[in-house]
Image (cartoon, rainbow, N blue to C red; front, side, top):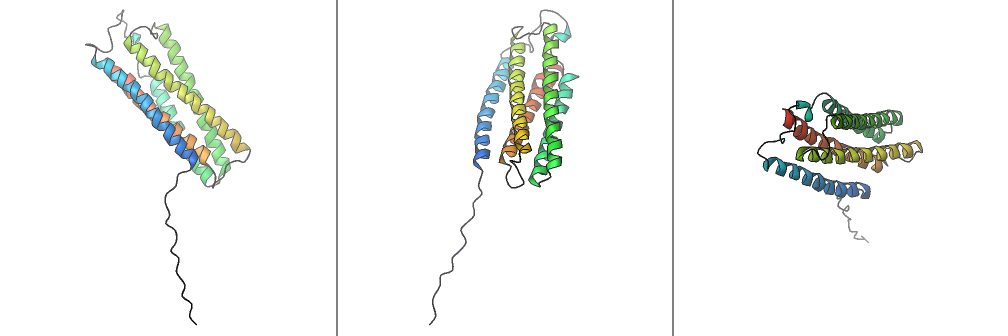
Length: 206
């Protein structure tokens, strides 16, 4: 006697996003709105002034910021850190742990170097009497670059935390959601800096 059997079709596969990555996507969406509001504020200031930047109290051109040499060097440094972070994640996804550790540490060092040069630029700006209350451009400059620097600092904390967890064997080629989320965040601060560099530095002195 023949027994009829029903052929079961395989369940449809849908793309899934890990909760950790989804949380980072949501967080970065809020960050886009945060920095977007600051860029909108800056463009409003540009459009509401007959001359931009506002005329300084002295005729010294160094009263304002310049894209060379520190901001340009910082752009190279941060872009390089994004490359090392990306390939560190690639190494981890293929279980090449030694390469991952090397590139991840290089990323941390580059990020720390960026912060050092950013602090040095602020000190030099203060020495030229370019302070937060000097004029509307100075206020926008310090607020926008300062918040970005704070985000880079937060990224460094996350990078170091991931490094510590990796030394304890908590990540592998099949389980690396944490490093992937932090890498995504690091790329975000890279992109934001490119906009800041183009608008605040090149846009003023170019």
